[in-house]
Amino acid sequence: MSSSAVQVAGVTLLRQKKTVLDNISFTIPTGSFVAVLGGNGAGKTTLFRTLLGLEKLSAGQIWIEGQPVQKGRMPIGYMPQVRAMVAAQLSGWSTVAAAQQGWKWGLPFYGKQARADIDAALAAVDAQDLARRPVGSLSGGERQRLMLAQALLDNPHILLLDEPLASLDPVRMRETAERIHTLARDRNITVLMSTHDINPLMGLMDHVLYMAHGKAVLGRVEDVMTTQTLSALYGAPVEVIKAGNRLFVVAEGGGASLQSCMCVGHSA
Image 1: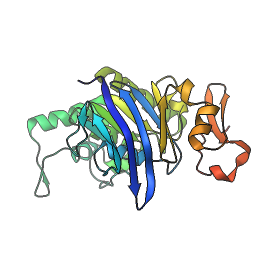
Image 2: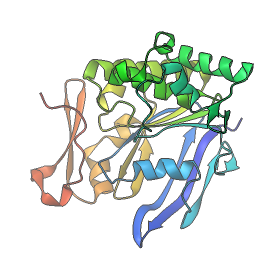
Image 3: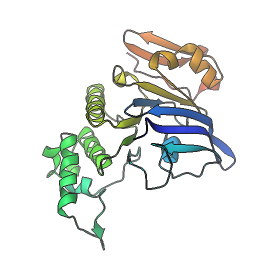
Image 4: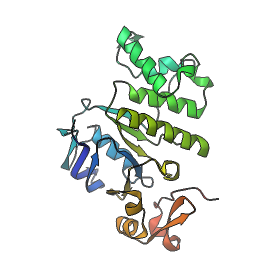
């Protein structure tokens, strides 16, 4: 296995003449836990799509474990931000199974190995108790666990998790982040997790990939989450405030030019 899980070199993506990704480059070591931060429209979801081979690059190259990115042929598990709707009466097991290959003529067909893989994915996220329960009866956090189990099918080397903490309360955010971190560490999985709040990941992540206006900077938390670094990335004054063990990113003076600036953390 390559020592680098993801290599991005000079990647630019234009969409309807608009620059969505702007000459970004970074390398993520195998086994890293990376928080992908940035406001709405920063390019986080688009970045994930490029790593999956779903976007045609305008310039640059991407390698996954040393191999050029190829659609559908990468050892990547993906949890999208917009979750696919499933019938409320489906069981948790069937919901996870829907992501497994084996649907024939509209009817589910699973061999012994496929069933074992689905059971293992549920066990990995401590969701065995959800296997027989209807999805419609589950809480948001319980559904998130099922979606994570889907992403774990086929034993991926890399997980791309797009806002997996969304709609969770602060306690569930931390619990979910710790579960993912433990799972990744035990299996040596590289994780890229996008989020609007860095604080549930404090003490868990190895690196921060911060995105703004299609640009990106990767590094340790203490190197990236600084007033100087983020002001340079945004191209406008930004202040990073540490309050206790929490971090906040705010536009200096509340300038209108930074309407897309993300606040990292919760106000009291």
